[in-house]
Length: 173
Image (tube, rainbow, N blue to C red; front, side, top):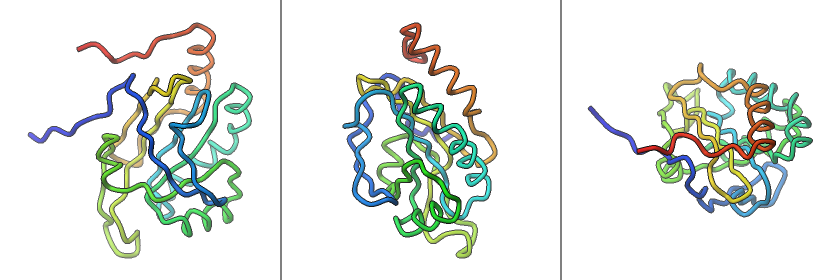
């Protein structure tokens, strides 16, 4: 049986920098406040488009709750720009998630099923919520495109965490 390292809840989020589809570079670990990073498979994934459309619909609610929002894939920035334009997403879309970064984050990684899908290995869906101290408050990893957290429930949970100083869970040995 193979064992894959997972990202430990409560650890500091690594100081990775990624290009933004809107231009410039973003380093989520250096941002302030609460942060949500949605890892998606890439432009080739129709389920990702549905999920990111839901994120777009809730973006203002996350921001009103004090949560910065990003979506990130292994796609090159040009593909992310095409997706952002085609779908009208207004949240920051980050690109260039590398394989070593995927491993460090404990993400499940897949190879394309055909050259028509994509030309690189890509991360399966994941969520990272980073608290104001830069620690991962919530981590959710999937190995397939069919399972992802409900974003409205996540938003409600984040409001509860903030209002009640709720601790990072999943840290017992």
